[in-house]
Length: 55
Image (cartoon, rainbow, N blue to C red; front, side, top):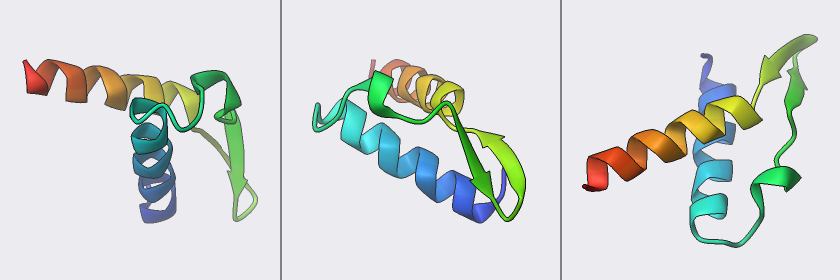
């Protein structure tokens, strides 16, 4: 995961956890520099990891 993708995932994860946005509003795929990156699935994974870590 490149730096831009990581920052997007962290930002969307924070917004979803804070209930400022819904997971369905996170784009499934984002084009960065001509390359498609999965964002929503990475956000789902990050949410799960943060939830487990908080337990």
